[in-house]
Length: 171
Image (cartoon, rainbow, N blue to C red; front, side, top):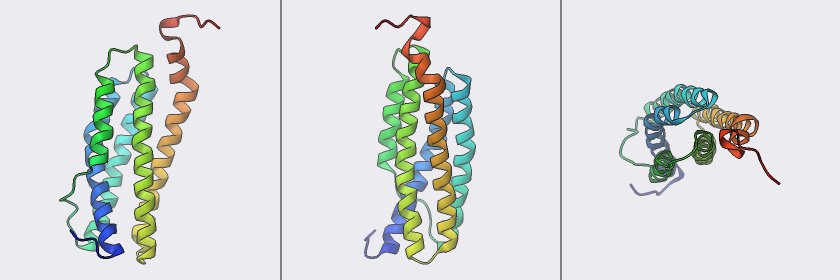
């Protein structure tokens, strides 16, 4: 596909995000299963439900554009998820694994926030307020998921990972 106009780029980026979200739909259940802390497993499960809604929003945008969402593979998400898969294969203390899972998930969230911020701006510039609003809703959810992961990391997960198995910290 030649990117001759901002609209061409917009559609190309939307397809990339569509692919990314579909890859994430497959990865989130595995991440939830790998999590030791029930709060983290629940966060991944909750985000799975949100991700399904985000795909539905993208479907609405593609329908309005009368364009197929298929035909592009998000290589960045493939790479992020491959790194996460490698991490889950490590022999790690459960609390340390949870900290690693949060780090991997936040990389994904930041990638998605960057992508959704761009396409939201493109939609605004192209005069598609409805799509811009849908994309902003997803951007807001991604930001909230990132904040929730940070809160979990700072209040439960990383604290447990500092001294796995109840070991005492030494100065």
